[in-house]
Structures are given as structure tokens and as C-alpha cells.
Image (tube, rainbow, N blue to C red; front, top):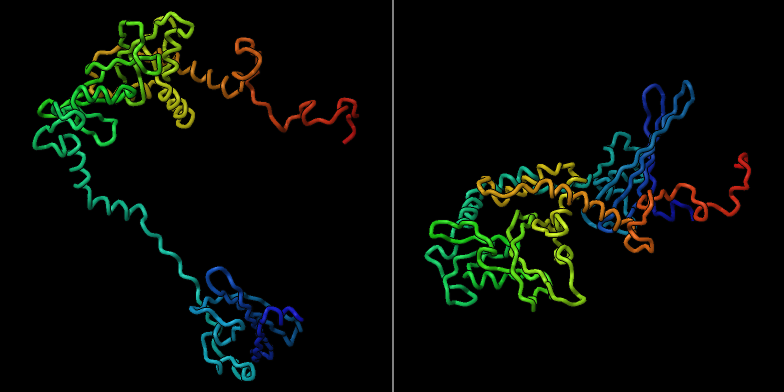
Length: 378
């Protein structure tokens, strides 16, 4: 069986006489090709011309595709591709149709792109006032605009406090707000003073965080201590209580802070800490955006006090030192030095370097006896 019979193609030959005695023949064949969605009919057209003077034969070939609306039969006829009647390109009458119309094809329609940036911006402008109203609503009492409602947790006191980081912003009393944030000491709290919400803190409401015993109160009664915590959400004053139990599980002060993901700025008596999230965020931003620490530090400070009226100590130098220590610890950790038999203090020069896998390493990617090979051997 020939290739033409296997594919089911049907050749059509047209002959017409050109000017100056030049003869030109046009051959076309139809090959149905199936894909997942529709049937595509490839139309191959050969134009062959012969010159009487030179005797040269020139030929060109073109491939056209036709996408019918309906699924074609197993053996499509040339009339379905051309879009004409069967008499238009009938094989027996093809020689008489020298000046007939060329085969018409249909190109697939391009998908229209919907929802570009300009369209989305125009849609947003139509609802701009709604967005503004919702922002202004969040500055007020919202659903409690007619008056403060009782606390949903205890129903004994009016709810005048809301958390800016908790979902929903439910109004609670001071006692229920402290109970709900025993493990969330860095959330930002706002108090309704009758006209607007003003910033307050969980430390002002009486929250004390126990750093040991899984958050429970230490059996040994100790005095609480207020420390300065800098987080991605801003700076906070948090009152903490360290564990001083006289047993084997006693931990140093800085280790208790590390176990709650707070990086201390000093070892002996830490008063300032930086959260792991803050150090990791700046590490990624500095590597990606090349942002300097000075601008990052001021931006974090402005998240809590954008006016600069509060008098707090300048902690930029402490943060700069902690950032260097954080990057060094990350290098040691990613270099697998923490799991090595060799202590970290005994690491030599270049112990954290990443070796090139393509470079020759004896015992790894070099055959035995490589040093005895001659230099001239390729």
C-alpha cells in the first residue's frame, strides 16, 4: 500500500496554459489530521512551471490548513475543503476549470484576552468610593456604631478593646483581651476613648509572659521584667518572667529568649531582643532588593510611631550587630557544621565553602592512579 493510499489523500491535478507557451501544473492533496479537539485538514499545493526557452522546471509548495465547523467524515472530499460544490473541483472536469477560484481556508480565531490591567483599573475606579467607605468604617466602631456592646466572651463588661492583628477585630474587655493573648504578646491593641481608637499595649493591660515551663507560671515567684521587642509589626514593650528554678533544667536568660524565637542583643542582662521573623525578613530583603539596614530599621519604627513623638532609645547599632550574628549562624547551619563531629569553634578556614562539583576532586570524580598518568595523554 502506498503512502497516499494509507493516508487517504486525494490528489487533484489542474492544468492551465500560461503566457509565452509556458505550461504550469498545480497539484493539491488533502490530508486529514486529527487532534484532541477538532479535525484539521492540511492542503498541500504544488505549483510547477516549465519554460520553453530554457527548459527549466520551477516548483513551489505551500501547505494550507482548513478547520471545518463540523467533524469531517473518515475520507473527506475535496469539496468539503474548498467550500464549493462537488461540480466546482470535480476530478473529471478539473482540466476545464483553468481559472477557477483557489482553495479557501479558515484560520482559527484568536482567543480574546479578558481582564487586562486597564479594564481592571476602570472597574476599580467605579467602586473607589466603596473602598474608601470601608477604610473609614474600620477606623470607627463598625457594627457597634450605636454604642459599645458587652464583651462577647464574658458579657460582664463593655467591649472597648480590639486587636489590630487578630482576624475580625472583635471588641473585648481588658480581662478577656489579656486572656486571649497569653501566647500572642506582640499583637497591637487599640482602645476606644469615646471618639476614636488610640494605641495601647498588652503590657499596659497587665499581660506577663512566662518564658519557661511551656508558658505556665514558674513555681518560683520572681519579679517580672519589661524588655524591648522589635518585630516586623513594629516595636513592643513586653513584660516577661524568667525561670529561676534551682534544678538541672535551669537555662540562662538568653537561652530562654532564644527558645521563644527572640534574638537577644546582649548575653548577661538582655533588655532588647529582635524576633527571628524580623531578622529573617531583612535577610531576604537585603539579598533580593539590596535594602540597607538604616532604611529598614526606620521603616519598622514608623509602623508603631509614624510621627516620632515617642521617646525610645536608638537600637540601630544593636540591630546591626544582631544581623551580622544572624547571617553567620545561618551560614554555619546551612553548611551542616552544626551536625558535624568537629565543634564549631574548631572549624578551619574554608570549612563553610561550597565545593564545585565540576572541579576535579581526588577520590570523588577522579579515577584511581590519575596522578601517574602522563600529561600528554588526552
